[in-house]
Length: 119
Image 1 (cartoon, rainbow, N blue to C red):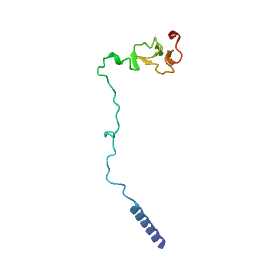
Image 2 (cartoon, helix red, strand yellow):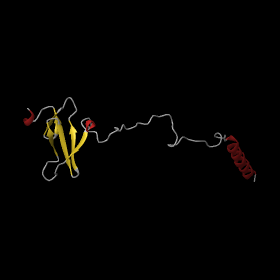
Image 3 (cartoon, rainbow, N blue to C red):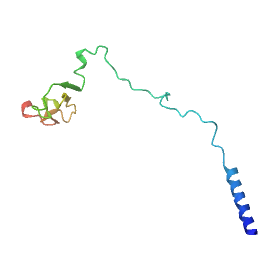
Image 4 (tube, helix red, strand yellow):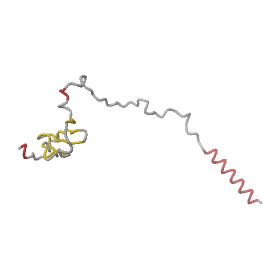
């Protein structure tokens, strides 16, 4: 009987030590700063020209579209000596060869060696 009494006293003291040993984790819940709050970061803004029909900005745009027929023109080809065309069903995407180490278009790929037509 004394063994049961000792076990009960041990369990009660253990439970009491656990309850009293816990500490409160702070005050009431506050704002964690969601996406709706400005956290001091700058947002990148896209600069839109005032006149979207102005043709002067098209030459600066690295991605231009042109017409092409995917059944006739290969998927990747050269538009001129420094521009390649990626032909898609919705049109041809013109991409300039802007890498100084590969400035020439050769068989639709930017290359250090110019094609035979551009020599």
